[in-house]
Length: 361
Figure 1 (tube, rainbow, N blue to C red):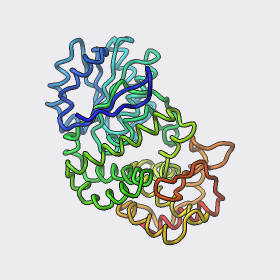
Figure 2 (figure 1 turned 180 degrees about the horizontal axis):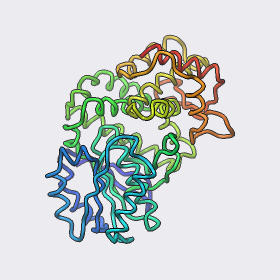
Figure 3 (figure 1 turned 30 degrees about the horizontal axis):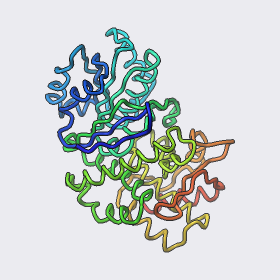
Figure 4 (figure 1 turned 90 degrees about the vertical axis):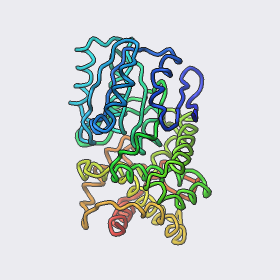
C-alpha cells in the first residue's frame, strides 16, 4: 500500500492509497491509537452503492458507531446540514473521545471536516474519499467548510485529518459526470507539475475517463504527492499553497453563478481556460503557448450560456476569500510548472477572459 506523508512533526499524517484498503480502516485506527467512538458521515449515493462494505467495516468498531447519511450535491454543503451533523453528534452523546469518518466526495469531506473541527472544539477526523476529485485534491490539506449566501466555502477552518484512506474501488460506481469533474483537478496538477506529467495526462486522458485503474492509480499518486509537498511547505496558504487555486477564482464564481448546478471539477477546467485567456491578455503567454495549453482543459465539456451576466460574475469574484484590499487576485500560468500568484487584473481583462471561455465551450 502506498503511503504519502503530509506536514511535519506532531501535525504529520499519512495518506494511504490502494484498491481495497477500506477494509483496513479499523486496523489503521487501532495502529494510530485513535478514538473508537465513531460517526460515519456517508454520502447517500455511496451508501446505496456500497452499503454492505460500509456496514461490514463499521460493525467491527470496538466501541460505538453510527451512520449519518449525507445528501449528495453542493447545495447541501450548508448551515442546515452542518447543524444537523452537530445535532446528531450531541443527541447520540458523542464526546471529545470521538472520531468522524467522512466517506464521500468533496461535499461530504468538507462539511464533515468542518463539523469535526468545531464539535467539542475539535474531535478526530479520518477522510475516506470516494470520488476522483476528493482522491486527488479535497481530502488532502485540511481545508473544511460550507457555502453561505450562495458564496463558495466562505465559512470554514483549516483542520487536518488524522489520516486519509484512498480506496479506488469506490470509484467504480461513480457516474460519468463525477468522474469527468475529478479530471478537472487532475488537469490543474498537470499544469502545476512538469511537461513530463502534463504530457502523460494528455496521453492518458482516455484511460483516465474509462477508469483504467492501473493508469489511474499512477495519476492519483502523482497528484497526491504534489499536493502533499505544497501543503507541507505552506499549511495555511500564506504563500506557495496559493498555486493550488489555479482556475479557482473563476471556477467558484461560475459555480455560484449557476447556483452550484455545475460540478466543481468541471468549473475548475473552465476556470483554467479563463486563467489561460487572462494570462494571454496580460501578455504573460503568447498565442502559441495559449493554443498549446488550451488543448488539455478543452477536452472537458462544460455547460455555459451564450451571454453571461459579466457584472454578476465579477461581483461574485469580489466576494472570493482570496482577495485583499478589494482587488480580485488570480493565479495565472506562465509555463507548465511556472505559476504566478496574487496577480491583479483590470475589469476589461477579466471580461475578455470570461467572454473567450464562453465562446470556446
